[in-house]
Amino acid sequence: MGNAVYEKEKQLKYLEERFNMLLHMLDSLDPEAADLEDIDRLIAVIDSLEMKYEQFKKSW
Image (cartoon, rainbow, N blue to C red):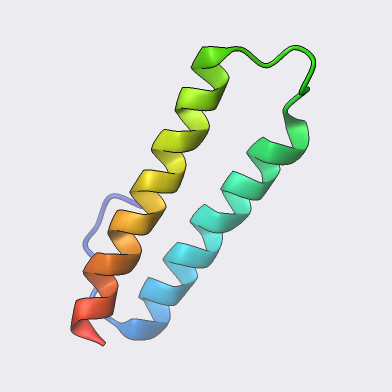
């Protein structure tokens, strides 16, 4: 996933894969054992996903 993505279908696929990764992270997170580092990692993934969405949206 290191290459630039310019086609809308590939951009949507990229976002879908990242969103699924986030869902997997949330599903595997134990709320009782989660610490600040876990929450920071989730926030970083969400921020990254939002940034990519905004970037792709400009080209649509």
